[in-house]
Length: 257
Image 1 (tube, rainbow, N blue to C red):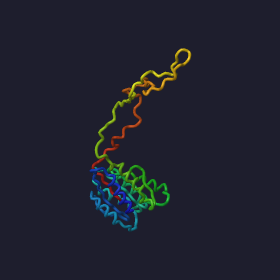
Image 2 (cartoon, helix red, strand yellow):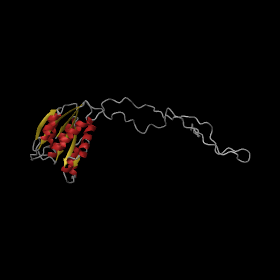
Image 3 (cartoon, rainbow, N blue to C red):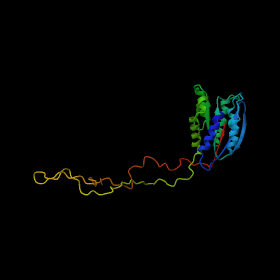
Image 4 (cartoon, rainbow, N blue to C red):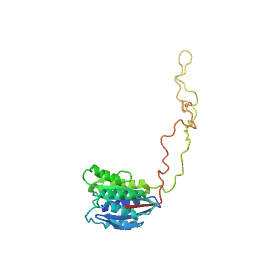
């Protein structure tokens, strides 16, 4: 898990737009959550905390971990929690209910939650429903330990984080789509020398001349029946891709569990 979290952190730094600030905190959890590293914009502190994590065993407290993590995040920013766990919650009289309640509170404060569930077995429908309830968009990752450190998973999770706002163009686009785009049809660069003929030129009853050699200029007149219009009958099939799809905060915060 530690290597996966370190890879995600480094990938986020690679994806971040120039001038972006990334803050992070690290919370480990078993029977109870432990704040390993408070919120900081010093990524070296986060990486050192992740490298120092060790497995201790015990119960699993999702609700406490999510609440502790949320308490470290600054309000009003693009915050997200990456919840990496290898089991269902087991703390409290209603462990899954506590987890869902804590997740709902964090999401209510604007935090995006992305669960990563580590298992080599098929997930029961009840586990799937629980993870969907934790997630902000109903999706989650389910991988075994061998797949956890795969480059593809790291890229996919980092892209999910990017869709929350970390990736941004460094300058705004300079072009905007026209309200009434026009279709331009360019004429040929040279006019034809004469109207084309359908066959060889004949004199009297018997041909005395061979067919005319083709002209170096085009022998077909341009089709003038389809002239450009200022108001096309249908709008363009796609919007221009020069603009960003979402507005982005200058500060992107995240927390790794």
